[in-house]
Image (tube, rainbow, N blue to C red; front, top):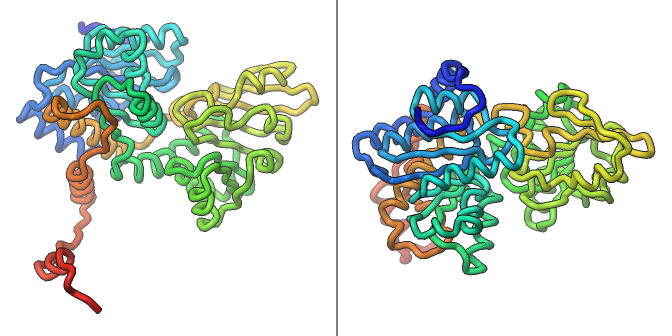
Length: 419
């Protein structure tokens, strides 16, 4: 059996069924796999991946393996692993996986080290933890790496900071910035799966409640839209004037968090920043307020600050922890402040991850073809890849669109046509 550390190998058969179920909703990635199997664009390349170990990720791994890559996978979040999926990848598909749901800090980083121990030539990240370790404790491996890809807003923020500081050791493709990723995965995927995670954890009724969304990027827009559709009164907080203006024009009240803290029943942070909910806000919360995070890292809710205000803590439901404050108010934190859609639910639906992971696969192919000519910078996904994924997705959905006529092409290429 391939090298691995999974919680329960006996779950492999169950995991395989779930992977096959997800695969049915991923027609674009299936088409990419068919071509990869014929052309072998990744043949012999050692690829290290730090991603959420879910059924959809498994379909991506099978695509990369079909393309000839030698794979090692670890989790990008301690609570996001689906243990049956991890077992299936190892036992049914002979792909090295190092991931446990609920792993502690030491095991999490030991798993990243296990992937780095394979001396990857390509990296694939969801949050940039693999690249961060590679540039820190394992800088000795950087010379082996041709390039990498990054899935998330948070990861791209980190990578662009590395580029600005001149420490990025190889080129990275910002998959998150592809239109076929952030316009659909971030908005529709995060919107639905975040609400799914909150409801699975709490079973609360959203209709009539005030739900505060911190951050109105694509992810925040998705959460706000889904919550509004279920009857919640949605309030938005923002720091960027353009996004705040968009939220106002979309019909949402916008206010500082200090004001929103007094009126909210539920709070969802989705900013990619730290301490979005902190002591000054906790002191204003209603009794029974529920706090959830949909950003990548568990830093958006200042849990240490909340714990300092609490006289006691207890688990009241799976993924729900009650903080009893000194003045008698109770505050509930979901999923340890980690990604609620993966801590308490199953993450994004396969049909939207189809496009995101097609971007990952095709970006990896692009790095293999062009990595030696690229600078040590963060690059966007080439536009032709983005458009091809959109075309394939529309075709799979049975949607047809128009083509430009020759006259229209000529008109768009001309500057002489006037009024």
